[in-house]
Image (cartoon, rainbow, N blue to C red; front, side):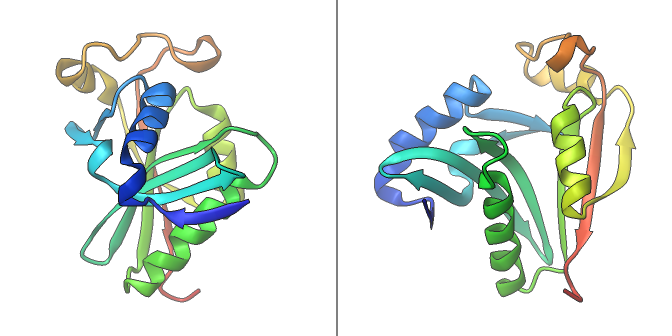
Length: 160
């Protein structure tokens, strides 16, 4: 498997992958509409098929992971993509990596904590505001859990 920066030549394929897994290239995070098609990131291929994607944005000394998808669970794809994002963020002189997930995403909450991210902020009922910008966000999320809150995770990479 190979990881590379999202290549210009492949934006159509990347956008199709995003739409398949996120139902749209638009994402709402902390009350802001984000165009995922315009984000930087890394893609992992197995032969020529996409098996993982991580997108991020860098602002000042913070790298915010916007999305992480792995087609094959428990194969190290998500871990490898985060390692690559951390490496790149350090190269860009970032001190913090952060990300936001929702309260229903139990697998992500477990994964990020095991990776070393700490819960930093809890945004109660944030999904109500998000639905005003993107009404297609469902009321019920993964595992039948009501989709209500955003949880922000952070990792200090300034000393690692």
